[in-house]
Length: 408
Image (cartoon, rainbow, N blue to C red):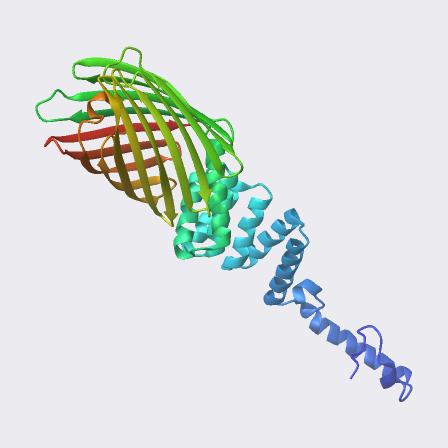
């Protein structure tokens, strides 16, 4: 049935019979009295007439429409209004934080997302959004920690994997310089202790080129010798890197007087890295050529690495070259931004990280040990390493090192 207009009598009702003047006056008086009685409950605006639920629904629809239309500042203001009307709505407060990040209000967005995750620590979208904000704020290490937690709960998720790759790339690009200070030592029964220190400076000019220079001062067998040199790495053909190194220790008798190296690395299937290396060491009375492959396999937070080296040593007093084999394997666990705990084992001859005249062609050995690298901040880290070696000549050696790294 049609509803009569408030200011216009229904024509069908009043067409039945004309009203007399007396009746019209009585009707007017009745309407006047009724108007006075109903004055406190008189007409209200359309907004006032809406129930709270109706107003909230309309505001939320308006905010969603603005977001879909990419009118981000207006959508942010609309979602803030909705969040004020319904402060318990997690979804609306999430969109406030997300839109804050998209409009450049990164500090506000991060604070809001942290509060949301205090309520729901496992919320996927909020964790992704927080990682994005920290990436955009130039803190890839903190973003990576969030993403690594997500990777554990959502293994293989493409959104998480893509952001992890981006975080690693940003970390490389934002860390231009690195200074390392290392102390190392060797202890053998009945022999003087060996002590040495290395200071290094490294930089990554861009994603394709890096270099490192290092100087070592070592005291061994009552001799103090110095070594200086460096290495470069050039990334070519996408995921392939070429490396070269050169070190010199003029007048040395324990350290090699010259050392050169060439290497090639290739990333295969994102999780596997293959290496091929060649090295030449020129000692006082011997020349050593080393060649061999290596690999690194990344499986989630686990790292498996292996290396084989064939060495050909020619002594000045013995023209025929002597061939030796050496190998090593290690298992590591990566946590945090780039922290690593690792155990390793090595076997064979001339399997040394710091080249020294006393170990070439002298014996075979079995070595085992471990290392720990921890980043206190994305730019400050500490690395500890220890190795115990059982030699075929019956001597046992303990080696250790402490390295401090500062990046900026």
